[in-house]
Image (cartoon, rainbow, N blue to C red; front, side, top):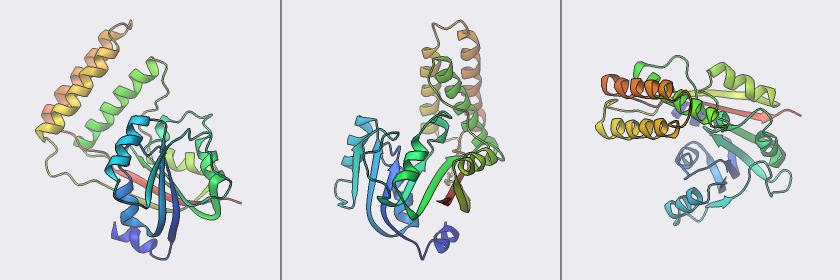
Length: 239
């Protein structure tokens, strides 16, 4: 992470907008890598997540959270110095206007940060996470909810460039994990698999989804699980 921070040392992050902030899990990363932060505004349509985020950061007066539709941002053009989105690209259908709206509210000399998990080149424990995500995403799609599988690194870069964002920095990082077979993590993901299986009980292909879910549970116990390597891409909006 020090390599990335050294590349950003001269950049003043100013007013930051994070789209799809959820409970604010990516905010510690922004606080770590950026200098000169004036304010961070996190937006999400999940009101419960926004309330939880507000409670988490209640003592930090530079951080605020707002329930808002990212496809209809209620901000003027060129409002923010920095815009960020983390692990949300795979939830956005091709016709989504989220990235376009983020471009609109970003200042002409501002920085665009996109952070996303990718699926290629992972170790065995990380592949367990990829398989679990592909499983849950497949169920969502079967139920009419847009949810792409984990992208490859190249797919992420292509998507970003296709949106008119000029890539300037590409950085890969892992979240360290001492024990990939930690019991609490195995239990948590096992329960999540079973809940996803339950979602398919009225579908004609329930048996197939049940088989896949049980295979992932078995893999968790044999191999463990770890979050995949993440790709952080920083760029500027092309004129």
